[in-house]
Length: 553
Image 1: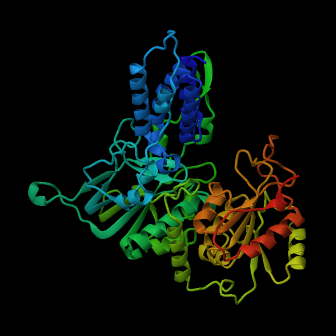
Image 2: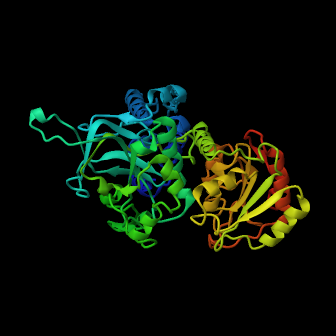
Image 3: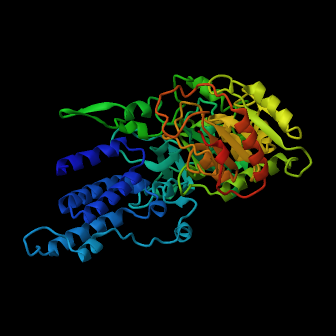
């Protein structure tokens, strides 16, 4: 391939890749092949393009997982140029590469510091003067920069001068399950009247600014990304009493459609390429309740009121009603905290540790004043089945229940439907129900996200529909093997045994397109084997155990 083709291909990958660090790692391997094949021209072109690509990658690179950072890539480029500049021609005038030179050019990643050492350098909150804008630190993964960001010492909150005007400075980043956002907001420290400034009053309270995605949905998977971090921050880290906290909500731009923009083909010259097309406004958090097609602003607000799905969590955090950020313009606080620690449970280095997730679970359980009877050996083991009302429902649910009662007579079986999950029951009732569940059985979907409430050492069985192909969304049919997948990653943090089960008869390379909401028919012999294994695993620590009798013929 030509130099131009390589450069264009790498540039396009920036806008289409779902894993830029993986692209960088792949190119590093290709460069090693070029060294072995003595293809110096391609090697030099790849290395040059790699530096450009690594710049885009630097702020989302987990260097402890991948083993390299932007500095390593740049140093590799410099070493390559230096070595080639000193290289002598072969006696016959050719471009042969001697083995010593090959060895010097080969990738040799630096030894990284221990993650524990780096963690000690990171403060839980980043405390800065209001007058100082937060800046990204080059070469640091963005999940270390997500905050919470904290300002103390009588801080005045005011509207931004220009909320969506391009080029204006912003605070952040603020990170959610969708990625990284920024907030434009006027924050000013109280200044003495003797200096000619107008003083303002401030309460001895904290304003917690939380970014919430899909505020109008009742989906617990999205909301656990702020439930758990908010409880961790306010109850276990900062230890603030509810009457000392006000909660201000911010939201992604109501017109944002990332799925559509990432699939939009923009014309570049004579070619159609995949290119992201989000305007800058989509990266800025909105201060008012969003008007969305799934829920108008007034309907969205009801979910956050005293009778809404979040009421139990919110009353633990704040004694006052939650409001949109714009309702706090003109107020003063002793402390302003922006953002929450991101969970990031689908990557190697989560933003919140397993110990912290378990601490939040224990705090909630103690707050509710109950101990799981099943854990104490008082009650029989309990299997809870999440049955969706439409889409990805278990089509043979009655056969499943009958089999469980026949084969596992000592196990209590309960079916949880839409009349219990979502906002149909109080948050605390849903937590208590799952906390007393030994084995959770559910289709891939929001109901399965409650597994974080299970006791450590419990088990969760995830059944995939045909529309989630295993080659695209990993499903290994082995216990605790999919720990970087959606629910496998969450189970890893909750220390719950997890297994993902493919649709009966499907394989790794099932390329036929299916409806992701097709109903699921559970193979009863497979389920029986799974449950016997799950019951044996209860109470044990996590480890990888192959499920050989589940493998598809």
